[in-house]
Length: 112
Image (tube, rainbow, N blue to C red; front, side):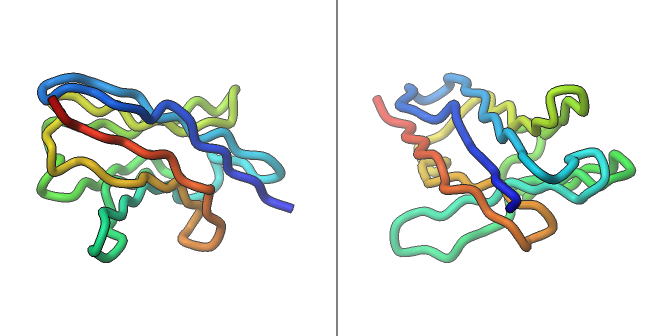
């Protein structure tokens, strides 16, 4: 079965950076639309960024210019580089393949 394993979350100070990774099994990231969502306590899950099979990217307005989604086809992995992190970026971040398969999530906490 398809498996997505996220990693790279943690505690970081405001203004800091993190890079999330999503390693995929039994599915090719190069041939699918891959996305990162996040869910903060008491809030709905929201799209953060996605990359299509053609390489087109899309970002939530709140992260434009700070976050970058990319993929490494050889490693079958999708990344989310997060810079200039803010406390409001605190959430559990989930990787998804075409909104069909989901990872278990990784916690990102931005706090001083």
